[in-house]
Every structure is written in C-alpha cells, then in structure tokens.
Length: 256
Image (cartoon, rainbow, N blue to C red; front, side):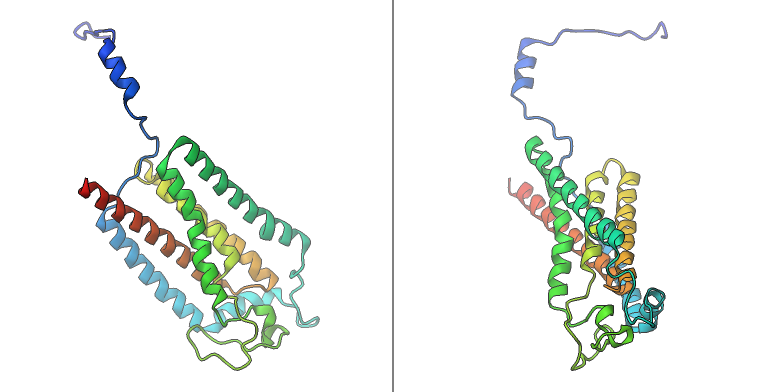
C-alpha cells in the first residue's frame, strides 16, 4: 500500500444504525425502464422478420420441402408421429420443465418481493397465451391432416382463401414451440446490468423454441413456418406487456 494513502475506520453511530434498520430492503432486481430507441429498434426488427416469415408462408414449397423427408409415402403417414422418445422428451418433459421453472421463479419472486422477477415469470405465460388464442381461431390444419400427407384436408397459404375442406384447423401458429420461445422473457431479467447474458437468454429461447418446434415438424404436427410465427408472436406479446408495465410505472412515478 502506498504510504500516501490513509485509511480511516469509524464505528457507525446509533442514529445511523436506527435509520438503516428502518430503511426498505434494496431490491436485487428492481424494475427499470427501456429507452424509446430500444422499442423502436424492436418494432423495426419485428416488421422485417414478419415480412420474411410472411414471404416464406406464402411460398408453400418451403414448408413442404422441410416436412417431406419425415413423411413415408408408402405407409401414408409420418413414422415419428407416435414416437415414444420424441413425444416424451420433446413434447412433454421439456415443456413441463419450462413450466415448472417459471412457477418456481414466480414463487421465489413473490417470497423475496422482487417485482422484476415476478414480472418476468409472468411474461413466460404471455407468449403461449397469445399463440393459444391465435391457434384456437385458425383454419389452418396440421400437416398430418392434409391431402399431401395422407389426410383429407386441403392446405392453403397464409392469408389465402380458406378452402371448403380446410379440415379441423387450429394448427397455426405452433403452440408447442411457444413453450420454448417463452424463455426469451429472461432477457428482461438481466438486460440492464448484464446485457450479454440478457441477449444470450434471448437467443437460447429462440434456439429452444426452434428445436421443440422442429420436433413437431418431424412428427407431422406443424409446418416450420408455424414455429417461426410462434416465436414472432411470443416476442411481440412479451415486449408489449413489458412496455405497458414500463409506461404504467412511469405514469405512477410522475403522479407521485
């Protein structure tokens, strides 16, 4: 230590200890606001990716080329449709693990009174909820229901005219993939202090959603673009809800 450096020690006074004991606990994960520039950049990215996904959805050959290798024309069905391991690991265990993790995180946030943790864990449910509503009202049928893959229904491109024999529908966007994409919500947990980790979580959510979604492609349950749109809507929902909470918090701060 340099001889010019003087270190002073002092005992805290009783008044300081009394104030510290009555002060509110510092939140490990306090709520925060995002800049208008951030929201504008996200909207721009969503517009560009939305146009790309729309173009891919309008050209059905893209989806057909990715689903065709998993279809057996001799038997007229997808051999992996009822595959035990694919159903167990991809369709059940991964989804259940994500739900369990979000529930545990929510309980931890409530017990520790961490508002940001609570908000982020609630964001896990926003994406699947949005996708579930869209899927329930969709006339698009799953690949295994289509004539091209041994079914009876007729497929049609996104925003195209719905044919009379569109089939059972309720297959757009990809509901199962949304369970993986919802992990993108962790972005909002780490972004202010650890931006690299935040973007890594965002990317991990995309990869997980695509992996889970492609498992459904292998089973004949969804087209690949169904999963792309699932990720798009999940991020739209999470960004919108966080933006709303951000605006509401700013409004409350101004009022006080």
